[in-house]
Length: 112
Image (cartoon, rainbow, N blue to C red):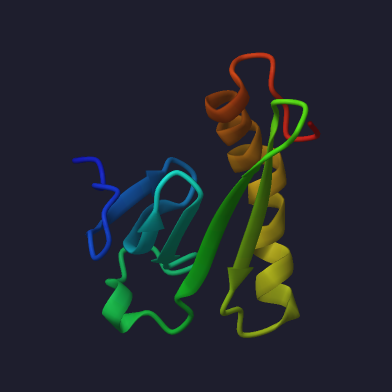
């Protein structure tokens, strides 16, 4: 599968081994501080244009005075509380620890 280019308007698919392929579109990029994308959280193999619940994910990075980085992650577009709850654990258990390693290096953690 070809990687998604991080530029405004870029579209593609990403793959979760457990959940299948999901459509994604880069909505906005303001390097190095902001990235927004839409994706099909619970609708594998559905193009973004046909999704009933496309979610918007916004990543905002802020440098701290101690040299670290704070991440503010916002996700919106849920059709109800169950849909939110079903998706919330993936960020804290899977995505954020991997992201922290890219921002802070191998010693970073989601709690930093």
